[in-house]
Length: 223
Image (tube, rainbow, N blue to C red; front, side):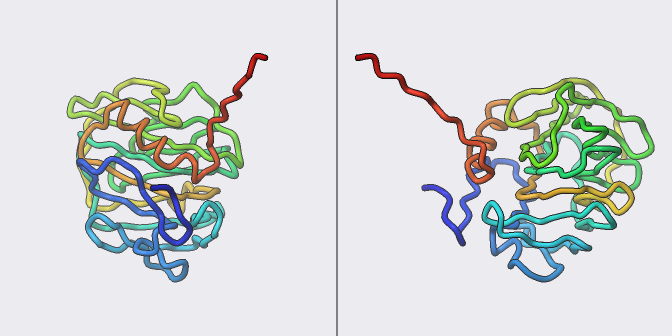
């Protein structure tokens, strides 16, 4: 079954999924208002400044000025996996993707690189690949119970490294009013375990068509 307008098929791994928001899923966001719902626990977050677009079946736009989505009930300690579909329009400075308050982890686009860091601490793991504007990416990070980190870009392992243990907090944001995201978000999800490389690739393949990342195969017929 593919993706149909008005009925988004989120073909992603379900084992360990603890958080899932999707602007194309009307159960998550009804195209209007400031309330967005996590479809796993049916709990709500508050949108501030973001706007809805029907592009790619449904996305949320962050204009880079005081835009964020706040969920006050979730922030899993390691092990975890954080993954998000994002199309940045500005990759300069620091543009937060996932952010957890009070000395916790965050993922961001930092000077056109994808990073994992901690509040008040320099970025622990940074991609080698530079990100471009107006381009959809599936950005993911896994952190295991020993604080080993794997960064992913579009379903492929990008970089490995380590981070330091921090105290979990119960406040999760997408974007941040201090380090505002400038761009669009389609789908964001969190797992309470480390996804394997095969599982991250599965998630990427399950939704890449929605975001225009088709793989074209040229067949040559020899006469």
